[in-house]
Length: 371
Ligand SMILES: Cc1ncc(COP(=O)(O)O)c(C=O)c1O
Image 1: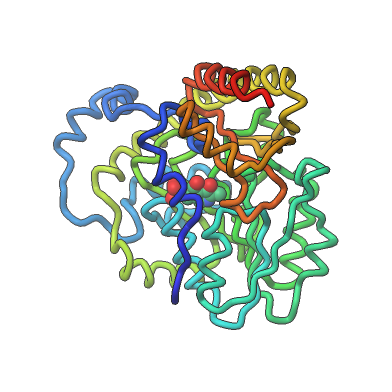
Image 2: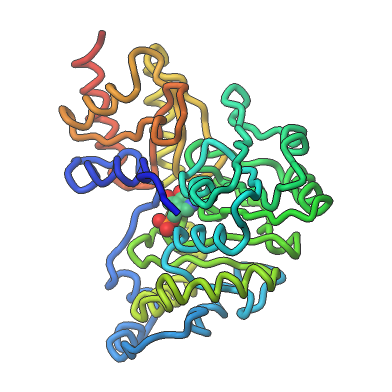
């Protein structure tokens, strides 16, 4: 299997630790280990006493207990903990697909959701969100895309990079379609709990369908990407067992300190998610004012959920714009080309506390480059 470079990660690698402002991060404001441990009385002492041996390959039992409480129908034995969501994506594709299989992927997409399957010799059909309708997915198009060789459908909601979220009714219809065709729904739910209104939150796919796999992580809505703790939750024993067997060839087990910290974090999951949503909502208000003042430069579309949006640059080439912005003003935006988007869109992220300062710097850049 030969994987091409991961465009988004390579772009970040060039600028992430050099730019003054990361105005395109998909994760929310993080915290220190001390701040996290301070949430839980006695946790600091327990952390220092935590054993640094290998951990259970499926994930520490207490951590899996905590993760299972996110779902309605999932037991701790139906949770498989990974090193980030990325490892889980890689292993799911290996477990569910073989060369020649067909996969349908919500697009534009986080590259690995399609690329791993392509590199394995699978056919991928992109199920494209419609930019003029808030990046909505059309269920009729999905029905049309299903072939005899189709094995799985991949969706990501709240969506990276557009912030799209379908209604619960549509999600129910999607579940019915995959069920009718005996397909596995791989539901990337890494931005779940970053919805602006609680009533918009979709049920987890693994709770609605026995074949479906839900993907979760501490990186995004909970603001703890440095822990590198992600998981899948599924009642699909075949996929679960196959992924467990494959994990012996990737990470074997997770980092023991990270598992400890993840367990603490999930005990305070509601507080962490609320903290992120408070930042997101305040920043979204600031962004809307900014884009309202720059309608000649950008076409802004308010996302439905999550810490990222995908506006369009109206004048000039977006790759050049992003390059000039980061090299002269130190503000990093992510050009849509890393998503194979050719609509001149760029990703903007608003989960960080310093967004108002980043916007001020962007505004100054626009004034200096008013052409
Ligand atoms: C949709 C989506 N899935 C998976 C991942 C991978 O998450 P992690 O970096 O925590 O492994 C990301 C990261 O940006 C993402 O946006």
